[in-house]
Length: 373
Image 1 (cartoon, rainbow, N blue to C red):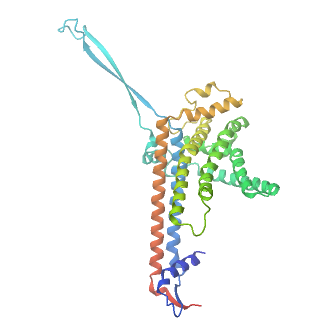
Image 2: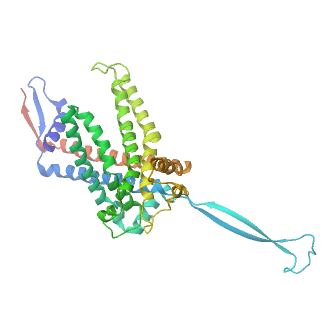
Image 3: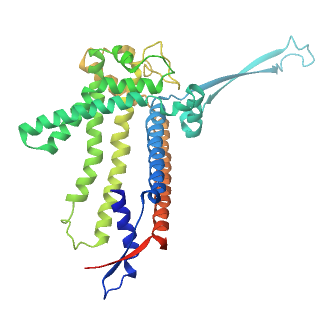
């Protein structure tokens, strides 16, 4: 497959040099050894991008969603002279003590990606960048199998595979909510010798009933965020045809991209934060988080009965309400930084691989001439 693609690229590079009368085509014979650097470069950047996506978009983002702002109280005591007394009186007689209390807001750890990664490394070593990876793989495997089974069942009865896939994804998110919570606990808590199955055994049906609402809302938000911009591009405005001008397509693409960004910030981000904070609130009391986190949501959770639907709904609301505006802005800035980092590595990968393909195509020793049709 790689050889066919590379042959095509090299052929296009020399297409302009072909003789129209004899209809000769210049192509390149590329051996597997010559393709090896391109394959290795692609694999390297694929690993880097996957690591950035998991470490920043998964681990660090989860920590940013639960971290609470901390304040430090500093008391300053000063000695003041009482003017009604004799100014020449001894110090131990006519002195009043004034107290000044200064409250300092500490900068959250997750406001800096570099400091957060350093904090992870100091806790769990170099591999802490991928903490919870095993549980994430298990969750994705179980989730994929569940989606496949449910979608096939729905498609068999309705004959609508696309609709079946949508409903299957929502159902799988809800059914696998406990496993997703185990991943969150593994990521945000201090290192532990417990396996994912041991963490899972600590939860029960009552816990799943609380997790079902955040998982369901997150699924709907995700569907809207990714589905509505595509629908806007395809169905809003005149029908897309082959002779449609590029400016019109560019305008539709820009509007769809803007809608995607707005839906991410206004819908998907709150749903993701709420789900993560609800999951983290069920962390056992003996386990501590690696960043400051108030798992009671300012004491609101202590006054709720999670056995009732109203109590579970109130917990869902308090999880987002306790995440103040400063924390929300900090999280949006973090995702902007993450997107910039991923874009940088994507552009670098494109340039590196493209340069190798061009260099390989310009090698005259590998070029042979073949007669055209």
